[in-house]
Length: 189
Image (tube, rainbow, N blue to C red; front, side, top):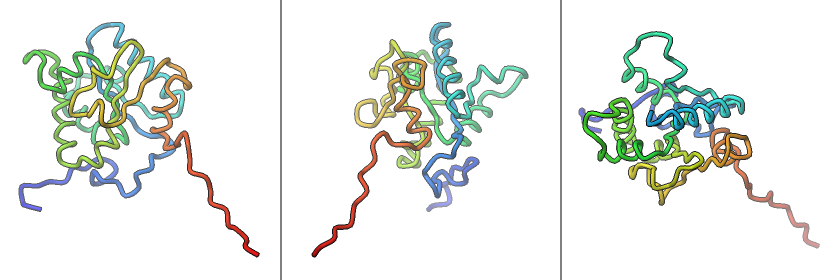
């Protein structure tokens, strides 16, 4: 490691956690575009669902009680989270791909830059920790390219119910939908 390299740390120590299995109540940061009232409501519906399913959710709309430096806050949330959910939308894709307006969506653009940096520095860890989420009415084409919309997993939420978010909840809680069978010992003779 050269003297210009650095280790990215959060509450779990270095970015590569010793135990990749999430805790009983995983901490999640939600990154999304504030592109419409309907989209914000959908994101908050997802957040409420996740909390009701035992997830420790951190989303900006729940932290408006004081003036704060949002860049510092978002950086800390991303580094401290067990998972970062990136909610797919056209403006999120533009911010992630660097194709949106230069002067718009500054907070989202900052979050996407940080996530790209983390992905580049430690792709194995951050591919597991950053989860693209597709809400009802959205599509895979709205996931930023650096999150590999077609060559890595993404999580489709079909409704704001535990059943509609089953795949996402299983990843957050580390419970696979299918487990390999337990081998049985054969008795010969």
